Length: 197
Image (tube, rainbow, N blue to C red; front, side, top):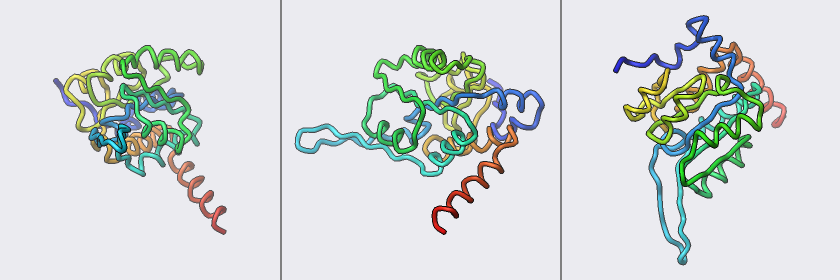
């Protein structure tokens, strides 16, 4: 298996910039992408609780993608209140939690509902449940610590592992390739200044 190009190089070629510019929707897995894959399970008064740790910089990366007019979808094969809370907090456009892990079907339904072609979708995955999706989207990307099968299905690889800023790295790389990162940064900084002063 040949080494995948690092995602930050997507803007280095005209083809890479064209593919980045075509993206209208970004799909994200949760466990192993938005988190490090660890799951904290517990029981409080007979009620099952599940906790996950999210990287705060990833959340800001998601907001930057949305500011640039890109839809963001979370598609996960686990059902967790933690995911619903984080998605709501970030204002994620589409959230699918399906314990049957039918990610291809879910993504096709989102694409149809949103009027987006599969070639206009980027997806960041890390393991076997993501392989089918990675094979059909226009811009398939894996985190640094993805499984060999996911890497084989992808076209780019991030340098950061899941749960350690991989989504932020993806957001920056995609927006840089589109020539939109600096504008997103200025929007963010000015919006904070207006709120405080």
